[in-house]
Amino acid sequence: MAIATPEVYAEMIDRAKAGKFAYPAVNITSSQTVTAAIQGFAEAESDGIIQVSVGGAEYASGSTIKNRVAGSLALAAYATEVAKHYGVTIALHTDHCVAKNLDSWVRPLLALEAEQVKRGENPTFQSHMFDGSDIPLAENLVIAAELLELSQAARTILEIEVGVVGGEEDGHVAAINDKLYTTAEDGLATVAALGTGEKGRYLTALTFGNVHGVYKPGAVKLRPSILADIQQAVGAQVGKESPFDLVFHGGSGSTAEEIAEAVDNGVIKMNIDTDTQYAFTRPVVSHMFTNYDGVLKVDGEVGNKKAYDPRAWGKLAEAGMAARIVEACQQLRSAGTKLG
Image (tube, rainbow, N blue to C red):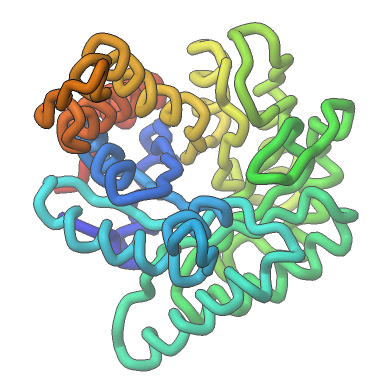
């Protein structure tokens, strides 16, 4: 397998929900992190999701260029080519697009994908996230409804956020307070605006104390039971069991028990970025420290080309990130569930 088609992506989500497991959604910023992510999924025998944020897309286009559409397409093109050889199915996703970035990022991508669909092709990305958590819910849902219609034309799935994830993500900062907990009323407002699939499929990030950033286990006060409460309350109103396909944001520092409970309550996608960044960088640090006289031309010497060759430390970085993704697949129960 390789990059998921729209039909296969829907099947991935359905299988995860029915099987009570979730896919790690790994942020990527370069060809190396793309390779590391796919390698990790392959080693875990898990399908998975790789995603690009606005900052990651800008970086991938060239740090002096910062063209978020070009960077997104470049990463997708690389992933599409290399994924063919790993034996797992990968979905491509754009992550955390706030309202002010829609016109310069997600809307142009959706327009390109709608043209691809008109030509009988599959869309480049399988899903896009609109993050309306920094605006009032009513406004958030009006924009989400418009994007859901555009997503239908592009044969993509929309991801939305109902509630607020605290901390900082790509320059967007949210306070850590009671707004971190989505309510059943918020869930009912969501289905009133977006339906339960008849207007197009969407993923929902309901918040239950989630915080972006680096935290030790126990520092973040998660309440995954909120997810079950909202699923039950909304399901009773619409006559559908567990109506939401849920996404877990801000998972760094979560305990195994919190992750398991969230997955039991309908989470099918969990974003992982902070931990994989560290897992990628840590082996490079070790390499530089232990081979300092090889990577530096100390006292007029010539160094050691085999030590400072980017492939030497690059392979270590990729292996470190891949290992962390295997761990995530095991925690989320997706290990060993690959299609085919």
